[in-house]
Image (cartoon, rainbow over all chains, first blue to last red):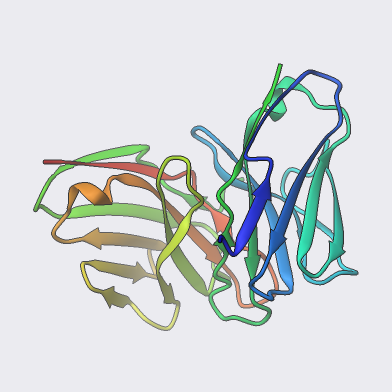
Amino acid sequence: DADVTQTPRNRITKTGKRIMLECSQTKGHDRMYWYRQDPGLGLRLIYYSFDVKDINKGEISDGYSVSRQAQAKFSLSLESAIPNQTALYFCATSVEGAGTGELFFGEGSRLTVL
Amino acid sequence: DQQVKQNSPSLSVQEGRISILNCDYTNSMFDYFLWYKKYPAEGPTFLISISSIKDKNEDGRFTVFLNKSAKHLSLHIVPSQPGDSAVYFCAARDSGNTPLVFGKGTRLSVIA
């Protein structure tokens, strides 16, 4: 089983719908992240959380919200999806204090907004 | 403003030859640099890293070189193999609590 699990893996929805992407991890890491990948734009940070009571905006947080329900769970919500939120979304975790800040990624959630 | 730049969207190399992937950065506070590899339908996976106190780090066929004065790093893969065909992301962070910042990626194709 994957250490970082994302659900759903694929989702097609319509403009205006509310969507939640879920992430759970068994690595025991405190830090969790949501990134978005678009062709030609690389990986961009949406939100991150260093512990259950900590939530921080990333580079492209507009139109998104997150919830850190437990150390192991971090969900990303699109309150009213729009077509330019069509992308591949990745959840990641890291260890607190690790020098390199190495991230461990899930397998991704592909979201299509029609 | 992009802090980590990978100016080559794609690179094609013959099997057995050297692949050189380049990355430039603008933030002089970056202390750690990482390379990630991504296959289609999978999440990125960590490949190799280097800290700012070093200028070279080697792991098997993979070597990362860091030139701090030029704010440039490169990943060398020798010899290149078809299984190395993937998108490679350069990433960096400072020594504080900031998350990794990624470049746009370079798609490497190794031709048999």
